[in-house]
Length: 292
Image (tube, rainbow, N blue to C red; front, side, top):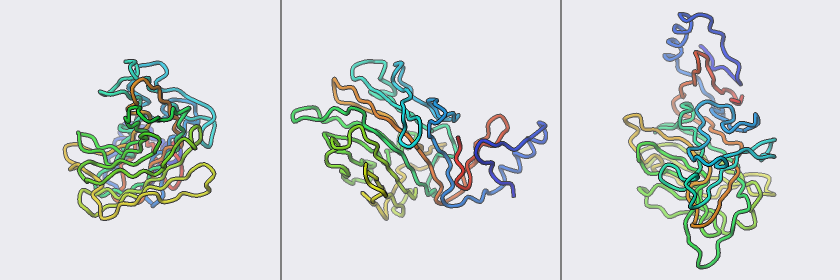
């Protein structure tokens, strides 16, 4: 059995004919993924806005500082910052005030019904201006598990007033869950998230959200959905799920900045995803080896 190539080391395919033969065999082969295999790791340690990964889009906002690198990161040398200035068109993209990165074009990190995945990310709310009574209550989104084609958003991690909350697909008719009642204590500190999901278009899935606050040594379960429809679309016509992170929506007349780091998509079960193939070379993470 052909095995995926790890870490940025590519299988040498010398000729065009050999390459085509290899890719044909590869496409017919079922990959033996193991639970815990890292499909995508964005750690920004090479100091670039897409972490050196083709398929990661830093932002669609046009302002020169809508996305930029910062030091240090959550664990390493670098992290990415997204910024939105309400009222400035340079921070307006995709029909709202936003500057978000996404991994939509990194196919191995997409999700469909039948997949089981773990998503991890770290976030720092930079100099976050606190909400005061009488201020607008607009929510600011910092992470999304999103479905293409206009389907509902399965999960958003957001702030509203001075709370951090989880917001779920409207179709499921479940209330938001406030997981940090008052974020002011944690401004300018790294907060770590882990989200385990079994993606289903029937009431047979699960979505479990864990969080590790500054000073905590391990993740704590903060929300659990079981016997739950996690995928709000139909998965047809090329529809698929993908991850987004950054700043989406900000209250009027405010500037919001958030740092993100150590963004991972981890295989837990389901069909093995296809490897990424760039210029005839296999780029794929396997057995806990991280795609740079």
